[in-house]
Amino acid sequence: MASVDVVIPCYQYGRFLPEAVISVLSQGVPDLRILIIDNASTDGSADVARKLAELQPEIHVSLHTVNQGSTASYNEGIDWARADYFLLLDADDMLAPGALRRALRIMEQNRKVAFTHGIEAHAVDGVVTPPPTADDDDTGDGWQVTDGWKFIEQLCRTPVNIVGANTVIRRTSVQKAAGHYRETLPYTDDLEMWLRLATFGDVAVTPHVQAIRRIHAQQRSERYRNAQLLDFRERERAFFSFFKHEGGVHPGRRALEQQVRRELGKHAYWSALSHYFRGKKQVAAELMAFSRERRGRAGLLPPLDWLFRMNNPIGRVREVLQEAMLQRQRP
Image (tube, rainbow, N blue to C red; front, top):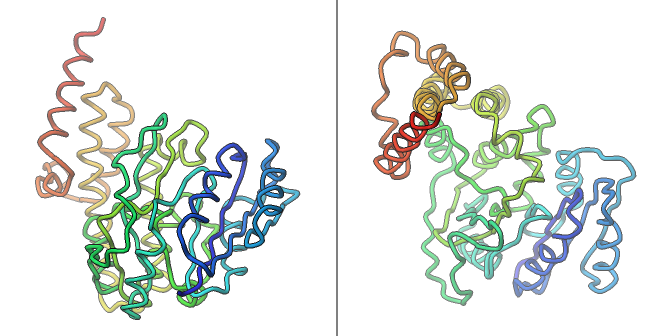
């Protein structure tokens, strides 16, 4: 079987680290290495990492005396990797059973695939949604393979990061060719990386749960997730960074950049309405201004086409209206 290198960056997640490591070791991949990179944690994470390494020879540890940030850890992992395949797994998250074997099967069968991804389930208070499927050796994993540039164009039509970072298993050679994560994109460096990796080959996605992300208040991304305008601006920066560098070779670059701006404006329009009906009028005003800047003269008209790209649009609208009614009833 092909070899796999898994890098687990850690900061203040010592209590979660053993489960992350066990989820990797239990994948049934014989040729496997794990690198735990601790970013100067003060919660005892380094001690946990050392003890794990003492128990398992395939576990390696890199301990930082100064917090260098997550991007530096990702890039250190890229430099360390030498296996056929490569994965970054956050220390507070876990791989789903069979995730590595599923990905390796399709990538060994189809050498054009640059990276794979799948469903990233969420764990809240111990409840995982959706639950992972049973691990088995069935080769019918429901993979859908898309040409890399078509994948990029699809993201430009709906500029939302649909790829769960913990599910992405890539060819190490492709990752080395794509290079490091960019420190100039602290919030959306992963989104830009998917665009870059896709320039090297096809993208395969499975309907199986490939990883489990814990949802908790201490997550580094919590501030970003709760800052709506920042989310839109950072997504835009990721696309523009890509087209400034690797994506600049695409003959339709300018048109795709304009499409990204326009579609982000449509998304922001509906997000603005949602926040307005929830009583968050300042956030709504900021998002509507962002929308108008990117949609031009069409900025005042509702972009109905975006509604049909939402998951369960009717249910979502009903939910927003119900919350609006509750807001009006409150004193």
